[in-house]
Image (cartoon, rainbow, N blue to C red):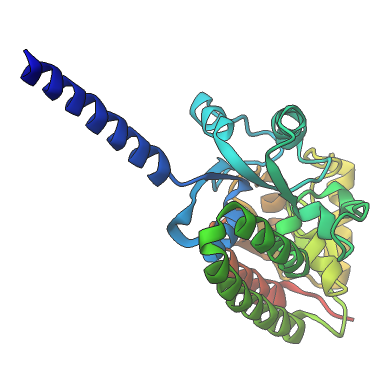
Amino acid sequence: MRRPLLARSLVWVLAGTVAAVSARAAPPVVAVSVAPQREIVARLAGDAVEIVTLVPPGTDVETFAPSVQQIAALERAALVFRVGDPAFTLEARLVDPWLERRRHVASVALADHVRGQPGSAPAAAPHGDPHLWVSPRIVRGAAAELAVRLARLLPGEAAAIRTRAVGLDADIAGLQARLAERLGGRGGRFLIDHPSLGHLARDYGLEQIAIEHEGKEPTPGQLARLVARARRDKFRIVLTQRSVSRRGAEVLAREIDAELVEVDPLAPDWLANMERIGAILARALVRE
């Protein structure tokens, strides 16, 4: 009679041990609002965390609604890397109330680094533009804060995270230097269908001219005035984006005989994508 009891006891002990090991092995979840933020987390934490992206590439950040699975994944988050801009409606509706109910969950916001100092009141987004991640200056500041938060979350990985943070900071500094060489110093203007590059433009003293007006397609009168300006300033490139309507951009490009060139602010490979956007902008700029 003792052997079956002993066998059952061993099974229970082993099952409990396996469950405990599995629970310990499960990496903490870090939720990011948009795909470009995912690369920053991955560069710092490596495989030590599970990353959940709320807004996938190729979607409109201002209208996207997350799936039930994404909301369930957010429920497991131990750290949230968010945009933090009031114009980002997904965060205002879902992420901010969720964080308010879970004060124990750490949070890092790009908006806290708009003025370069964590915790300062964020400046108004250019033209109501919540795409803060297109500014290497903002991302660089947020990445430094994120490294500190990740080291607290993963004390066993703290030294490795600090080392990776130095490498990431150097890469962003290099990106800033190359963008400054391409874009900075002489001003300039560019045409774009949806105003998503305002923070990048502000960093390098550029003017973003959006075809959309207050988030809508331009009226015939507004489009006519824009055509007249584009002809006067001799624009030869109109930037478009996959996730928004191209109708206004197509009409404008046809009227001024300009090339349509696509940019993707939501591409997941943030560093490489910012290099691509910088090269495209350098071609699209009209200088004085």
